[in-house]
Every structure is written in C-alpha cells, then in structure tokens.
Amino acid sequence: MRLLVVEDETRIVEVLRVALGRAGFVVDAVATVADARAAAPLVAYDVIILDLGLPDGDGMELLAELRQAGNRVPVLVLTARDAVEARVTGLDAGADDYLVKPFAVAELIARTKALLRRPGQALGTVLEAGNIVFDTIGRDVRVGSAVLPLARQELAILEHLMRRLGRVVPKAVLEEKLYGMDEELGSNAIPVHVHHLRRKLAEAGAGAEVHTVRGIGYLLTEPPA
Ligand code: CA
Image (tube, rainbow, N blue to C red; front, side):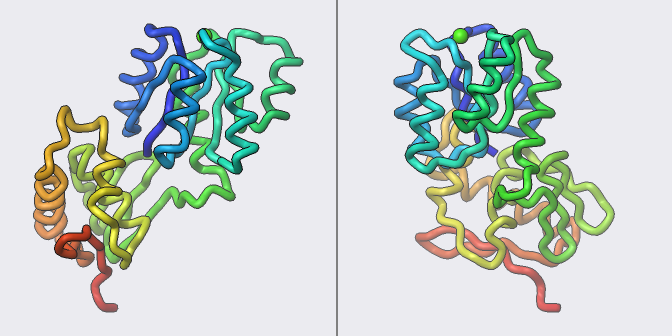
C-alpha cells in the first residue's frame, strides 16, 4: 500500500514516515500544494493524508481539484482547525475522514486502515490463493496454518500478485509499488525479491506458484484443484 502524505511540518512527516512504514505502508511525502498536485496523478496512491494549512495554499483546494478530476483516492484530512464548520467543509469537499491536530499516531494508522477497508474500494482485505492467505491489514501471510515470515518487499510483491491472481503483473508496476522501500532499486531488485519469495513459498508448501513472464513481469497461479 502506498500513501501520499501532504504536510509541511517536518517533525510530523518524520513521525508518520516511521510509524506508517512500520505498519507496512510505503510513504511518499510532499510539503506543498504544488508538489502534491504534481505527485497525485503520477501514482495510484491507496490513501492521501492531507494537511490543510500548507505554505502555498489550502489543502482543501487540492482535494476539490482531485475530486473534480474524478480521482476517488481515499483522503484523510489533517488540520489544526478544530471548528465543526471546518470539518463539515472538509467532508463536503470530498474528504473521507478527518483528524484534528494534535492527534495520536496510532489513531491515524487506525483511520488509514479503516479507509482501506471501506466497501466500495476495490481492496480486499484478505486475499487467498490456494493455501496462501494474506491479511493485508495485519500484514500477515499464512501458508496453511503456519505464518510465513516475509521481508517488506516480498510482502508488497506477493500482495500485488495475489490481487491480480492469474494475471501478469508488469515488472514496472512492482517497481513503482516498491519505490521507496529499497534504498536504491536497481534493475535486479525485483527479480531478487521474487526469487526469495518463490523459495520461501515453496519451502512453506504453498501450492500457488510465481511464474516469470520473460520481458514482461510475473504472475501467480493457483494449483489445479
Ligand atoms: Ca501545516
């Protein structure tokens, strides 16, 4: 899951980056309306966390633009304005949830996860392929009844393969999803993570297999019933 944090207070950004990273999210952060406007259409973000008081404008303008452009990404608004009026305005402008500063980071993570669970989002929370069960909220993978420990990158790859079970996931899509997780994402990074993932799945007795489609990407197939 990849999040865009739009916030100009460096201290808050750093706290969110660490906490959301631990919760299994990849976090991109920008500090201005202009940068957010540039970033939002480039990546299929799963949630945008949007501060309203930004140096070059109001986050609400950005939200209105996104909705006008048909972008339905869930948006969690952060603001110091605790007036009921501001809350109503935010929800009218298309925010999905609202958090007043100062807030507890645990609360923000819970709200973010709740947005991902919302019906209407094309985001299943429990994915299954053969005997593999992936709880995308708990970031927990089981093969049969045993928990399978995976690195964050392997989790991210497996999640996208499971969401598109039986269909090819282009390598470029995986690279985009993993951008920000690896210090530097060399051209060999995805094949290396896939190699480790495949080995761990095989060792755990997973029936589903990751196949390489040469020059294109990868796909996960379920074992024949
Ligand atoms: Ca601010």
